[in-house]
Length: 338
Ligand code: NDP
Image 1 (cartoon, rainbow, N blue to C red):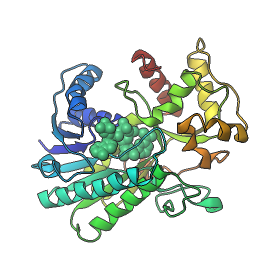
Image 2: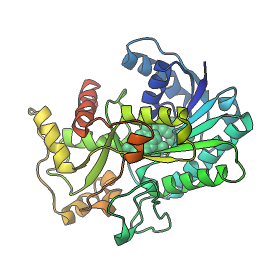
Image 3: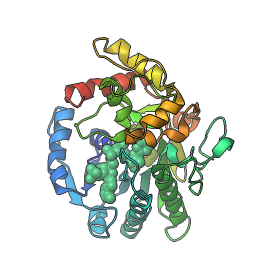
C-alpha cells in the first residue's frame, strides 16, 4: 500500500484529502503543528466519515526544521497543503511569506532526501491573478503569474502563495532536480466543513448567514468544492501527465450577491444581506471588518479563469457552485458555527 504524507492535516482541504486518500486505499500520515489539534483530528475525521479513522500524526511547523525528516520517512508521495491562510491581513507580510516559502522548501528538501516520488503542492489562484494592475488578462490560465513585487494591487497572502510556488518550481528545476512536482491552484474553496475551526474561505458563506453586512460588496469569486480540490490533488499525484504542471482548480464565477441569492433561496428563514453595497462604503466597512481589507483590490472586478486543464488532464468536472455553497452552509449550521 503506497504511503502519503499530508502536511497541515488539520486544515479544511487536507481533511477532505486525507479521507479521499484512505478511500482510494492509501496509507496516510499527517503533520500538524499543534499536538492539541492533532488529538482531535482523528475524532473529526471519524465523525465525518461515519467510521473510525486513525491516521498517524507527526509534529512539524513550517517555520522550523524539526520534524520534517521524520514526517517524510518511508512515504511514497507528499501532499504539501499547509500554508498560513489567516482571516485578517497580518501586520507584516513576512508573517505569511516566510512560512509559506521556507516551509515549502523544507518539505521539498526532506522529500528529495527521502527519495519521495512526487510532491503535490497546494498553491492558489492568488499565485496567478494578483498584482496585474490594469493589465490582468481577461481569462487567466496556468501560464499566468501574479506579480508579487506589486504591493498596490495585491495582498500579503497572495504574495506569500506566489513566492512559495515560485520557490518550489525553482527548487525542482535546480537543486532538487529529479523530484516530481505538480501544483494545484484553487480559487475560493467551499463545500462541507468538518469542524467549527473553519478555513478563511468559508467566510464567504458564514458572513452572509450571520447577516454581518447589510448588502454585498461588488466582488466576484471563482468557486470550487473542497471535494473536487481534494480529488484534483490525488489525480495530480497519480497521473504521469500531471508532472511539472500547475492546474487551476475552478468552477463557476459568481458575484457575492449571486451567492447570497443561492443562500436566500435555500434558507428562506434566515435574515441575510441583499443587493450590492457601493464601493466607497465597502472601503469604510473594511476599517471595522478586517477580512474585507484583503479583498479591496478586487472590488468591482469580474474574474474569469480557464479550467480546461482541470477537466482534460485531471478528468474533473467541477461540482456546481450552488451545490458547494449550500453544502458549506448546511455543514456550518449543523456544526453550530453560524
Ligand atoms: P486551513 O486554514 O483550514 O488550513 C491551513 C493549514 O495550514 C492548517 O492545517 C494550518 O495548521 C497549516 N499551517 C498554517 N501555518 C502553518 C505553519 N507555520 N506550520 C505548519 N502548518 C501551518 O485552510 P485551507 O485548508 O483552506 O488551506 C489549505 C491550503 O490551501 C493552503 O495552502 C491555502 O493557501 C490553500 N488554498 C486555500 C483556498 C481556500 O479558498 N480555502 C484557495 C486556494 C488555496 P493549524 O491548524 O495549526 O493552523
